[in-house]
Amino acid sequence: MVGILVSVLIGAIAGFIAGKIMNKGMGLLVCILVGIVGGFLGSWLFSLLGAAPKTTFWGQLLVGIVGSVVLLWVLSLLKRK
Image 1 (cartoon, helix red, strand yellow):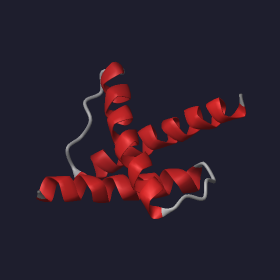
Image 2: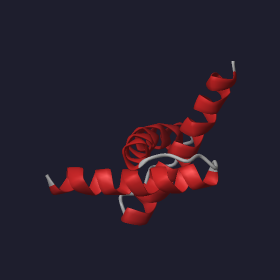
Image 3: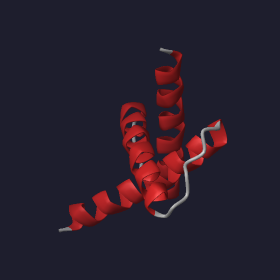
Image 4: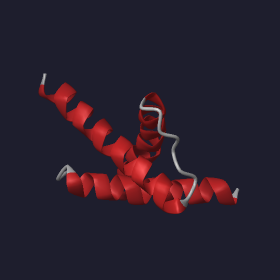
């Protein structure tokens, strides 16, 4: 239970930071969803590059931010078309 709450918290922070980086105004629920999906995407991308995602708070946050930025970028490309 605590692990899930920590993941949601890290996802919310990662989604919020990614939204600021990509200049997207998003609500709290959207930030959480983008951060959680971005965390999975970031873990997958890092594993493709041969870099194991870190299990520390800062490592998970970095992976979540990178994944969330990539997710927002892809979504912005799809939205344009």
